[in-house]
Image (cartoon, rainbow, N blue to C red; front, side, top):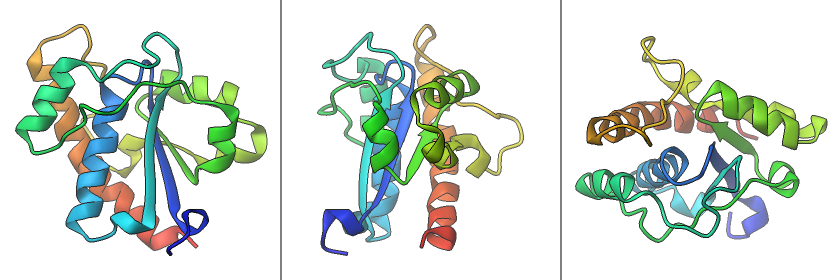
Length: 163
C-alpha cells in the first residue's frame, strides 16, 4: 500500500471543524500509529459549515488533546465538498445533524460511506458526540473519551470489512 490511491481514506466531520472532527482525526491517527498502520491510511477532517475555514482547532480542544499526547494544533478547518464524498472511503460524522448535512452534500452513490461515529462505540449511553464549544473543559474531555472508544471500534470495523 505505497500509493495514495491504495490507502484507506477516512474523513471525520462535525459542524465547524474546530472541536470534534479535528479531535477525532487526532485520536484516530494516534490509534493508527500505535498499531503501526499509519502508512495504510489517509486521514482528514472537515466541517459542514464554513464558519471557521482556514482557522486552527479550538484552543480548548488542542489543550485537552495535547494533555493526552495528541497534537492537533496544525490542522486547519475546511468545509466538506462533494469531491470529498467521492474520494474518501469512510465519511464519519459526529452527530445526527451533521449526518443530515453531509447527506445533502454527498451524491447519492456515495452516501453508503457515511457513518455516525458512535455506532462503533460500545457505549450505550451516548449515540452522538456532543458539541463542547459552548461548555467548559469537561465537555472537551468527554469528547476525547467518546472518540477514544469509538476510534478503536472504527478501526476494528475497517480492518474486518474493508476490501
